[in-house]
Image 1 (cartoon, rainbow, N blue to C red):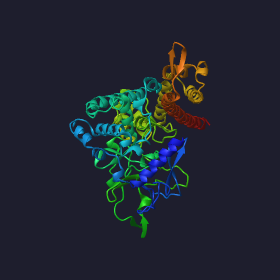
Image 2: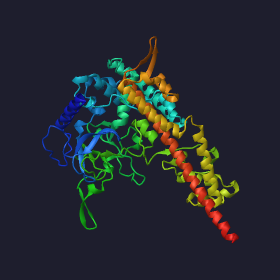
Image 3: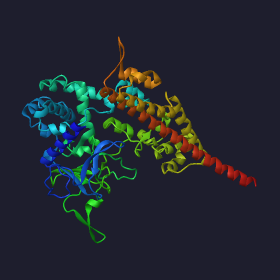
Image 4: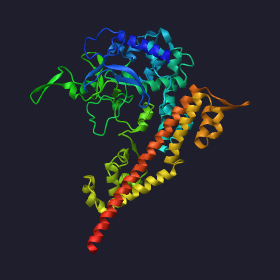
Length: 508
């Protein structure tokens, strides 16, 4: 812990020397650290681990961190190394992200001789993105779409690595540095930590700026103007169009107001100051964690690109199997037919089911009502809700474990972690059964001639973290389905109650 603290202190001093500052003024005070005026590094065990906290009360829209262009790690800045530049230019078929990944590995190979060394030492030693999951953790996801996404991510990473091997060998990278494991680390670093810059679609690594943890935008968040931290260029918004430029005041109802109060973005690269600027997305009190929105992601997407998930993610969703005719009978895209994280079927799913469960000879006549979101009839709505309940129950029943079993498993995982930390895991191996026992035998233990030998806890911890994420993801997925059953059942009960009251009234 002391070594980590000293390393962090050296990093913040280095960051200050290269112009990174959290001062709200364009003329920051001289300091040995780049932080302390608006932000400070803190640890949040329940929400993201190490992150940035407010060093004082912060106002929504206020500038809280400025990182000059010269402090951004980009392909452009790394390829000032002549050897690297010459080698890269011989491989024009590689994508910008592949090149950036190689550049990062090349820079890491320099170790202390690298100008970026203080920053590189602050990067995580491992990641928990989908591509980093082993077979056991991938299977633990249980949902076919999630398993397929993990296998696809791993396959994509492997193909990218194979294509880049000739370049890495030409750079004389040691086998350890150009291994697939090293490639996974570097590509996960770029996937999870890069920020958008307008001149390079590979993005940039931003010292100090990548310490912000994630805050999911709510359902009412405005998409226009959001600046995303992502490795997918299709998700990015142009910083030049999303940030205010020029004068920082506007007339509103006859008054001069600071436009930063109405800023619709967390941050972005600003050409006029040649720096990446970050702004408070809401008011923060001193000591609160200051968060950054990377964009709208489901938990599976967060796991794929960033290696974490949220217990309460307003943008999460679950898909259930529907008949092919549902898709062919409506014009809504497949990815719009889902269940919200609160258990409510999406507008498109409910509408598509209303149309599909209407006799074919009547669909044309009621199509305009369905597309406007109107219910067709009490009976149709009851059938739609009943079909949804039946389908969700069938999906839940088909899983190898129930919600209650997954809850129990999460508690067992915590016990395994505690026993591993205390060095007593071998002694309690026989107390675990089912998936927990399988995990210990497959991922944490190796059978030798002298009995069971425990892997070092550092390795075990990495396996545990990834397995736990997989179990937590599938548990949240199942909860969405269970909440949908509750929601639809309540609708059915209301319909039956209203019909029952109407019948009693007519009888009287």
